[in-house]
Amino acid sequence: MAQQAMPPIGMISWQDLTVANAKEICDFYQAVVGWSARAEDMGGYQDYSMRLPGSNQTIAGICHARGQNADLPPQWLIYITVADIHESAAKVVELGGAVLSPPRRLGGGDFCVIRDPAGAVCALFQPIGLI
Figure 1 (spheres, rainbow, N blue to C red):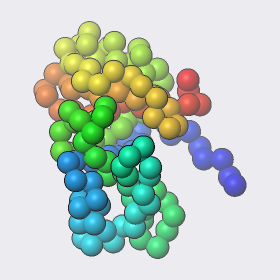
Figure 2: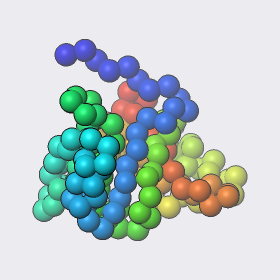
Figure 3: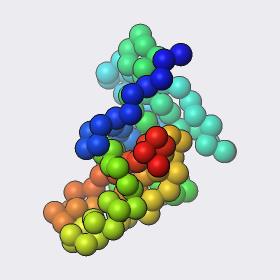
Figure 4: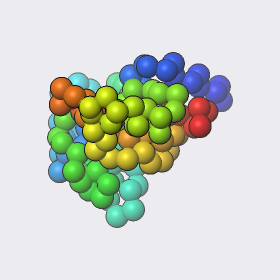
């Protein structure tokens, strides 16, 4: 199996949608855009990894608004790759933004959810190879 290249710093490298009923919305996107889904065990419920039609390439996640994700708004959340998650989170606050969800581990790295000074929400992601 070939090793995947590290996403470049600054690249939008992932997207998630966090909603109250992930299964219903997963089914919606499968019907509307043709994605297929792989259920991901979250310890008592399932979130979904969405794949391109006819492919095993995972391109997005559809997640339940539970646990640490309970307060996330129901919107597509982009993940922007950064070199140092803690340094970037500190810079967010220094420059007038807010860290809505502090840095924590997510599979292949660490991430946090931020709000910029204009009110837009996104996530910052530091892959394990950069940790």
